[in-house]
Image 1 (cartoon, rainbow, N blue to C red):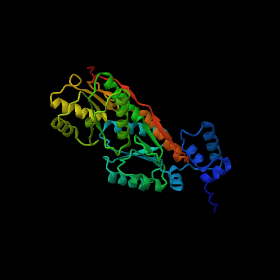
Image 2 (cartoon, rainbow, N blue to C red; image 1 turned 135 degrees about the vertical axis):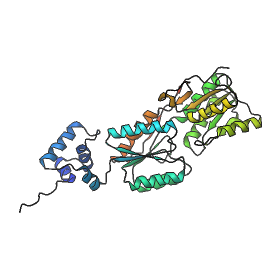
Image 3 (cartoon, rainbow, N blue to C red; image 1 turned 180 degrees about the horizontal axis):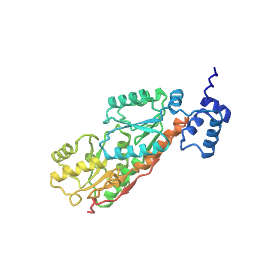
Image 4 (cartoon, rainbow, N blue to C red; image 1 turned 90 degrees about the horizontal axis):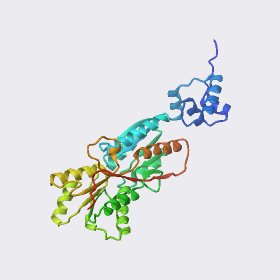
Length: 335
């Protein structure tokens, strides 16, 4: 009876070629980050050694699933939907499939998402954290699974964000330049890093213009709930007036716009309006909202690149900030 030929393992090929097991594995799976010459050399040696490229067996043996989890706050917001699409497309170029989790900005749902992703043995995680506490990120760090923050920063971890402070400054400075002094800021919860930074930019614009900040017009609105109407009603009861609004997001700006219309307040004739995220760069809308562009596409692909480096063994903490810019639409009128 013929003796069964021993199975050629990735370790055998690594020893023969001088490359790491991870490099051998990625070359045999045609990963884009492996140079063509290296890939061909490894495949040639593997073939000569009689290796059978069984991807399922390899994934089980090495613990790889070729899958990344993406945990986002509110997928009903087109900003996050566009972000997810860009992540999914770019991750696929590296050979990874993506699993989406929606947390609705809820910490308990976020923890459930993290645990579910870990149970699926994902290779890495991209997360836009709820940020009410640091406990979920501390737990995620304790698991050893590579992860990257997107859209919100925490100095303890790797992240990719847009320059929120600059965005807040650009929006507010544009309104001040148009003659507005009483600018209503509708911002997100202060435990969210991007909300704090956009508020800082708002304050800087007033300071650089030599104007006093209208503290009574800084109002927090839930980022996932219909809170604009209550804020506008409260301002009316307090006798507070404004000629312009800077909203934390485009979704919030559109909600504010709807509330103004119900009160027969016209945009921009009666009230100028600026949002954040520039969602309409990917949507065909009949009326152009002036908005701060967060370059979500670049932010998303950069987050994937960063995560791949970490999944390949990099322990370097990378914290990347992408500049913002004002996309001028039709919702700001000069006084």
